[in-house]
Length: 174
Image (cartoon, rainbow, N blue to C red; front, side, top):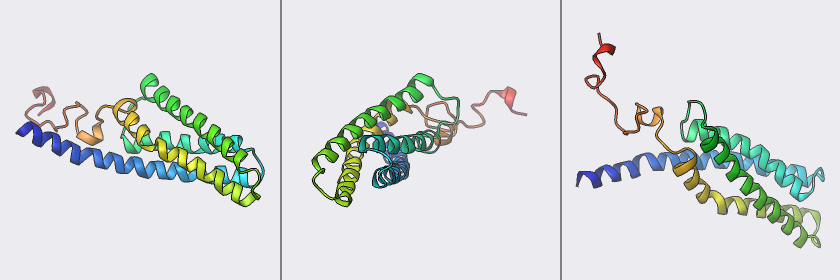
């Protein structure tokens, strides 16, 4: 029974906090992305695909920093393959999908006036990221930023429990 209780405590304790931080970071990155996309496309500076790429870039950098440092609390040197490559491959897949989708939306909305066309392209851009939201969380949580960190457990040992002073080797005690 203790195993079930421990599992429930972990699931109801850490995961909701991490998911809440992930949601907040994703909203911040999404706002940055959407503002960049709408500004670049709405002012005729870029095509829909180019504006989507610019929106992705502004949000992806902010998202990586927030996810690594705040959401998953990784402070040590990044693991190049797992964290950096994993995050950027996931983000590039999202870029490809959003660029394709906004291009299709702009093509379908070509007969519309500029204002409604911008709104439709912006809505498609947000829709793609909304669809990817949960999938990216699962990938980030269970693979890219997997493992416990010092600030979540207090020890960095991965056990999820703090060590008492009696468990620390005597050479560190006075």
